[in-house]
Length: 113
Image (cartoon, rainbow, N blue to C red):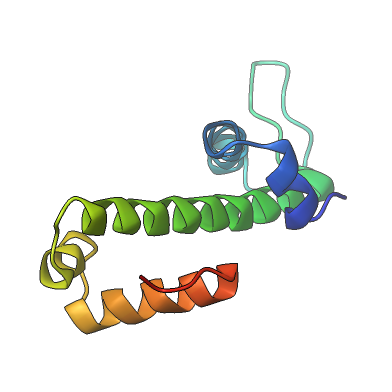
């Protein structure tokens, strides 16, 4: 079973979301038991490996979305947005938005502007 670290290199955000959605929908539509599906087109439940893949894909999506969010914060700041405006755009306070971004910059080894 690949780890989120392996999958992060394999998938783009869009391909990870597509695969996640495919597995999530199949999981939601499958019968609640482990009995084999009838030949009338019932959806098969996820296998153990697919359920683990679904969990790992969720982690990959969160990582990639977070990275994209922080890049968008940098773009918004470069375009003149205030921390109050950025906080509102991400449904948090200006202080929380600033702290989250500074922490992300530090984790990336990037000097704060």
